[in-house]
Image (cartoon, rainbow, N blue to C red; front, top):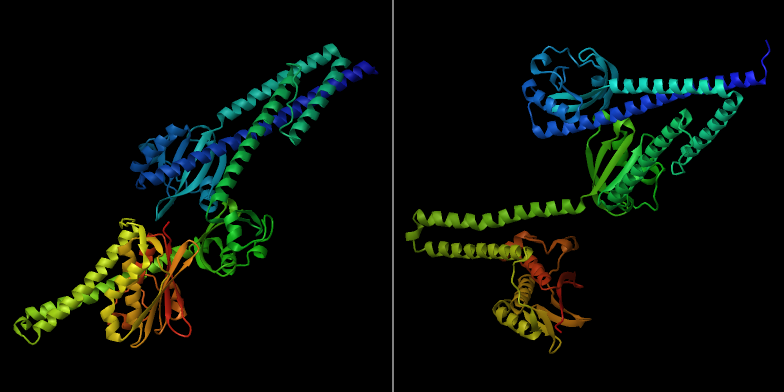
Length: 585
């Protein structure tokens, strides 16, 4: 029997309807299943991560009695099954089992998700649970209960709801198919043509949405199966658009945080290509442009970092520290973090030059202050013991010993006084009375103070001062600064030499200099002479009674008054210490 055009159109329409219904059902069932399973797995990972934080903060011992209540609380809070597994596979806690049942649970050490978590840092599997009599999705992450017990945290959730949704979708699509067949039977060729055109429009709109999620949604002009499918596609497009916007916002926040970090951050994939870098890292390594996509070895030829990246994961240290030569000498600390599944590395680079310098200064200061205080205290103690042992009644030695005790007690007092003054200056607790001061008056006070030491060494002191010049300073503090500089010059100047106090105006400031023609200071010591207890010649300084704190105190006092201090050598010999002070209005 030959079929006419109506019959052919009817069969074609019927075949198309059946084919499309079946294809859409299979595709949506698969896509929805994958999407739901992915969402559940992500939620389970979040639950496992939350459990890891709670366990770490609780500090509970690795026992069933301590951990099972925590697992129960986690299960109630997350509506998931939380299982805590020790390194040997023993279950230490389960949110759906009591402590008596846990003791009879089989060993979980060989469960696929547990093995994968211990090996790769994260495990996932889907299977039937005989304990709960349902299909379950399991996600496991490693956790170290103690240093000797690296175990696993597992979160699981039933897939029954997802199966119900699959069945419901199947019935909906089957119903749509039957309705489409009924329509084909009643409308014939018209229905076939209409459905064909409707599907073409739906496909075109879906492709448009796939290319650009910000495009207009599909217009729904019917409430039948095609309208339902269009509505579902619109729903997926809307969720995708929200996800893209959330990712863009999160990426913007991340970029803002990265650009605001002092530390340099670099992400490198497993092919040694730079995938992310912030401004601090670019400046730290002196890169001319943003090297995203370039090879790391080409832009950053630093051997210690390349050796770190080439080290096997099991031998790779958490951090390394080394000296960086280019673009400027500095000390850097590189902290390495391996991305999940071996997808690359994230390097955090910190400039620790100043920190290491301050640590060295602190160590030097502690060592120096201990030595400086120990010497006079030891002499005081030794002399006191000698006096108590009988020398107190000996007129030949008692005055000598007491004189030595007085001399070292005075030195100890000077050290402590200077330290206290420096501490008060650093804590901004040193009272100052800034006022217009005549420099000639301060210099005259200093000359009266050092008159006798200069006469003892036959040293001449010359002055070159501008007349009637007022500077903004504390007169007593400025006198103390000048006294320290002049006394220091007298100590190290040879007999019969000369010292010059010079001052001149420079813009809105006055520069004061104390220059001697002593032995000078080697260049290696120029950057450290203002540090506490730092001496160019320790033996000679102690012999002259110096505490090693004078120049440090001068620096703090001058800066406290709003000035600056420095040093420069004099050719052919000698030293010049200078201070700069603001002029009084």
